[in-house]
Length: 262
Image 1 (cartoon, rainbow, N blue to C red):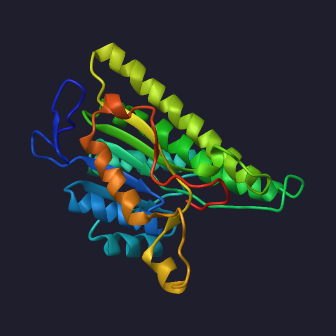
Image 2 (cartoon, rainbow, N blue to C red):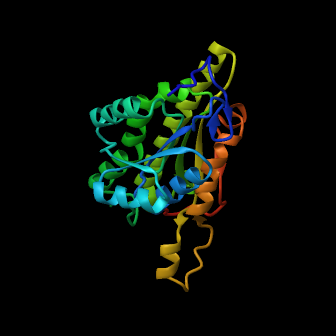
């Protein structure tokens, strides 16, 4: 399978010009946002690999998405992520996109009751997983003619409340890391004369899916972003130029600051 490297194939839609599909890794693939993203990418013609930490859940999610390839990995473990990358390199080739949807939320009443346990959880889920995945897959994305990295953040980063201090701080750190990846892609483009890879932050207040609506039919979910809208935004990243995308914060749903789960 051709790798479509920097000096090789370009892209047409979801495929390289040699006809092979762009390969996208969806992390946090067991949840509603991961299923929606995998489904939308598959329907658009991408080859999709979806990752979760529980085999039964990720296999069920991949089937629900319509045929994504399920993979099991603890993304908080750097050695495990390296094994994941090596396995994909043997079976699929270079990865062209990473849609990072590993999330989680913890809140409190204020500053003094922000617990160490909550911080450890948030730091691992929001920051460590992103650091591991981007360090390991960076060269793949940088070499792709259409490399894309996206992570989901929260409007609470812009105006954090005391009750979500740990959550907002972890998301802010993840955003900073993503912007550093974007700067790296920018420097790479100066070296080879073409911007073809981009890292972006997708910002929402919170996410909502059909299951949440069915459980609370009376609730309006004001300002929430449907996971299907998030999925469409992920697909759309590959049809926009890297130069216009790289380093952008893409706000899907303007909303007041506050607790949010992504």
